[in-house]
Image (cartoon, rainbow, N blue to C red):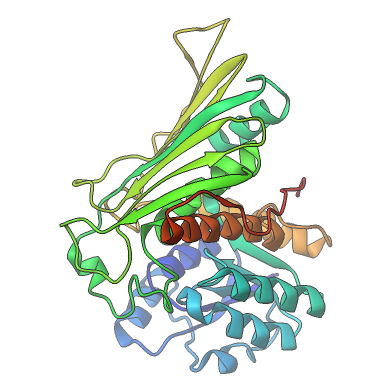
Length: 347
């Protein structure tokens, strides 16, 4: 039986604990020094052991998997510790706070020969898989454009947590913390753009050190343009939307529901319906089953020597895109995508 340790039991760590329990995976221990978070963890997995610091947790007996659910700025150092012990790792998104540290993390895992997966759980939604299959088999024709819209809400109490939104702690604001999921989803389906234009802004809703709003455009090699609009200041918080437009049809992913518009059904047909609640107003609002699918597929891939569906290399591509959008926003100009790593077939 697989045994896991969970480093960090904030919102993300608790989601992983619930998913591990649902998947029937034993939790050897959690690592935290916060009594309140330990209490919350034990409400999910009764009597789970605790170890601090994380290096002690990694010495737990018969461990197969390490879940790194600590702030992004700690990921590289913790993966180094896991790599030294030859333990496979599932890292919360993003890989790290910036592209150089993300590259270093992927290199550390590769050099040690350990498995590396990243928590982009939205890829596991049936509607997301159906959209990717549709695009990849040419069902929409050639890409002509699309959009990524994330109209979420976070109150000031969310940003009052120590380090929240600080570049050295989180890597930035809404772009790298919230919108990254759906930029990942779009490029996982449609591939990477060549150049991007971005603009970051701080609205009147929050007092934070980074952006709570981001707008951008992705431009593909064939000239297709994809608009990006993301915020955590859209009260009361809505469902994220992703659209892919093509020469043979268009598709919209609204939360977990996929609708396709084409010559057969110009008014649209629902291909996959999932009315699961989203995280528009609550970071803990996502269903456990998406994390569970991610963990189960990752554990199976590691056990059989395969790349997991959300592997480190494809997550590095997403981080390259985010870094390029930040660089464009700082320069106020179009920029080429940093390290345009192409997605490869996985799993």
